[in-house]
Length: 342
Image (cartoon, rainbow, N blue to C red):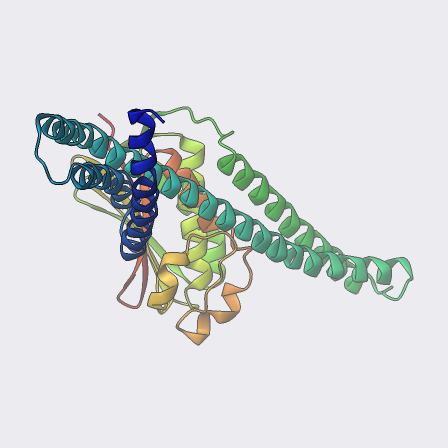
């Protein structure tokens, strides 16, 4: 047997033992670092074998620090300097990729849960008026109701439920366009005072019917914003209708507008009695209907489909703005902030 093979036979058992020992050390280190970041674990995964190789070479040389050993040590150090930072960067990239994937999965799960909840809510809201329309239609068809006055009442109720269903379908269509990114906005300068006046006029009848006073005021000068007139009109109408619905009879609703030079803001303040603090973050969620704090508003809260505020949030965000709600005095303050027109 040649001297080279003698060296191999001599070194091989020690190398195998060193490999087993290194694997054991690496598993132990990884177990200790299991709560640390992916980058730290990958750095340990790369660094431990390099240190093990260096120690193994020192051991095989009989701790004789020869020129070859010094060159081996320098080589291992250079490899560690090059590889360990790269391993850390790779670990961070893997961690960020995993975090992004988990965020997407969480968003998909939340979206799916929201869609299921929306389907449940909409199914309920569709069944109720449809059941009423069917019952009244059958009563008219079977001549159960023949008195002209009573027939007129049934006709009005059928028309009312039909209008309610039509509004629900319109809201669903609008919400689907917002979520799908299919709604294209044409921006132009909008005078907020004119916008507020139009919306107050369109909601005056509903407020007057319940004796609710609706007034508008400016905090300083009325601002001008850049946006789509139809969509911002719908935002304010949804907020105002929501405020009127939840405000007790003979209460008051106030629309306030102002600007800080960078942003214009538009607020709707009602007298609903407030919203529980735990429900405030969920107010703009699709189909959310929380329990109002004041019993007088509870009957009003059940009349909507729970889509108006979700649509308002979507339209505001399409304008690059934000919408929020907080409890304020005897009720709530819904506030929209949009970039001021240049």
